[in-house]
Length: 147
Image (cartoon, rainbow, N blue to C red; front, side, top):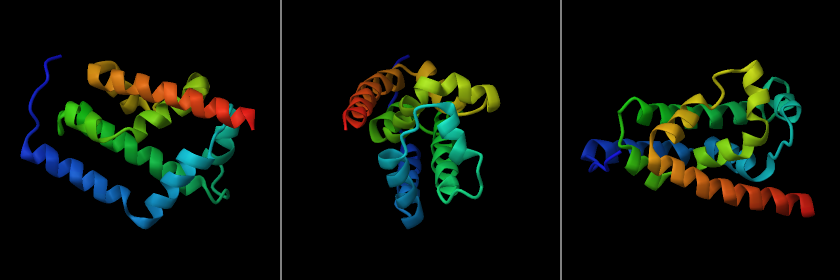
């Protein structure tokens, strides 16, 4: 796919997405999901995702739905894929983090991270970014197991 120049409207969307990410509760949720929440199985994932009594349940849902919304904007052509990929990696980190048991999660929730997956499969820049992030996540996962 040929690289296209982003428009000022694309830049505006990217900046709005960034602003949403800096909201205080969203920052807490993102810090937890990227730093502390490292499930090894679908069962560990669903223990939080399906449990409304778990205090982290809203954070998990908030972060996942945010990144799926952002990916959907790209997939549907509302924002430049190249610009989005250049400015964001966290959605790819989530996909990589849950990749070892993604099929098992999708047995219960077929739409789980579907737009992020579509983004990676449709845009070569997204696939390249995902590959880089996936290597980092594997390193992080290995470091956690070594502790």
